[in-house]
Image (cartoon, rainbow, N blue to C red; front, side):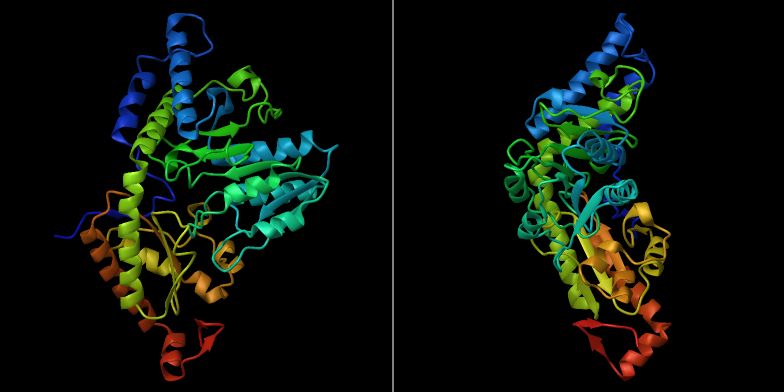
Length: 403
């Protein structure tokens, strides 16, 4: 019997866990008080917020005072980059990031460049790694901030964050990492790794959408992004989304408790799926590293196909995946991540991202691979470039390319 739906796009978003939903429900109806109110109905909500703050802090092994609630990773990234740049302008106007960051970081850097800041965009190697020696080489006396993501949202590359932190330990520049894809999926220790700021978003680890947090190391001053009331110790104005904060705290606790076992199962299923695709579908390529990769990430490029076409064909079979970052779906341009690791444009446009969860079964993977084979074969059968290749196969730089 064919499954009704197979969801393999967990990097885009995850299903809200039952435990998180159950903890949220009272704060959607009965416990509706404003947390800033002094009567019990409000105070109960304030206590719930602080409980969630402690739950997240325990995962990061940091004091609860280091956790500030935001609307998600994009707000957290913007907050750090813009306010750090503005508040440290007298120390310098140089920022370092990588060329494969999420657009929440890249577009904020572009915004700052238009306002006079100098941004160095580090190259990555063919597997998407930032090479620490290049970062060291790029550091200047006027560098005030370095922002390198913990794990890439498209190809799953886990960056050498601890090593980067060591390099920056004796430099006045602040170190920010976008950990949206990493939090809840891998062990993180910002204090030990000399991380000053860390961004995360609840809907990536089975919490609700529209809520996230920023970790800020103790002793660092960061001016507010939003101005208004005194919520979050005066750092983030606006009435708190209590139910979402409670749900994120529950999801963080749950993710941490099951992290090791979940990651081990995901790695087994991930490697099984990669092996099947590579052995059964010709002219494909794994994007990103085999090791130091998120446990649930599979990103493959297929010659002579358009990734979006394959995604649509798989959707017709009840399989959810993506042809790149969900934030850029619908765009015709090739992924900036894939082009920066050296893929020709046609291979970059022929990429498919599967991101699984611990609940995936071998039967679901077998079904997905079978339908993927059919979709690729169907797409190639209509490709004049593929027909020309069959007649006169050509390669360039190790990649099969369109005729």
